[in-house]
Length: 271
Ligand SMILES: [Zn+2]
Ligand SMILES: [Zn+2]
Image 1 (cartoon, rainbow, N blue to C red):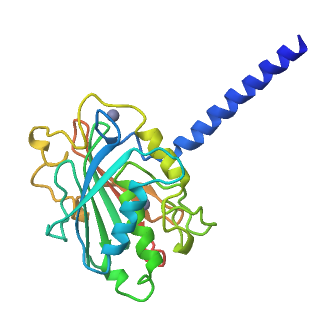
Image 2: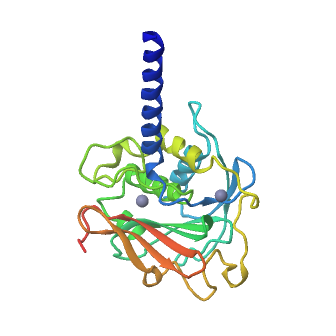
Image 3: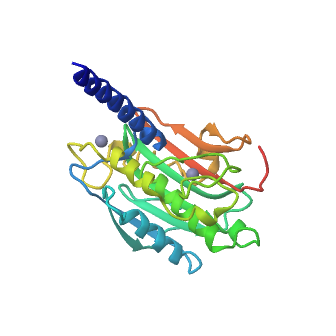
């Protein structure tokens, strides 16, 4: 009897432990947003219009996200295609991710990821890297380029930050805000685990792209709205510990929303 009781208690403890683990694991997607697909891996095309200062970091980040090593879930199948889209707007085609660099001005951000969603499904995403800062002395380093490239592309898959405190110890993932990028240049095991959770279920439709819905054919955003323009980003829904905006949301109704994730310039102005 005693042995049976012990086994029961041990099982209960295990169940409690596992459910706590699951809670922790599920903590860094920024909603339930994901690319619609009916089987895994999700096939995504990442278009890019980047100059030679950025292409190597883009290649490393795509490879990192595409090929998790060490036996973690492999839910993304990424391909890349250069194009010559206007970098200032950096508009993504429906069902695609677009990555651009340009001198976007003293915006307060090193990089942004803009993502349109319809319901739970990501329709399109763009990533911008801001040369106004990268051309200066503070951020023109391989580590800063690698971290922000990796993080903004990570957002485009539905991932959130693992940590939003710039001043604590690095977690060893590009999904961690920091003032010192050296050990945060790549995803870590927990990012791949989180992708596995986000893409664990299958959808009935999709197949690596957004679904075209009437006037929201352009990835959930009305055709006449330029979501590359910060004035169109909508309201601040999240700030960091220093009060700087890190997430904006614009709601177009009927489940069509646009989110903009920010990597604030660490020594930039406080809002
Ligand atoms: Zn789904
Ligand atoms: Zn971010």
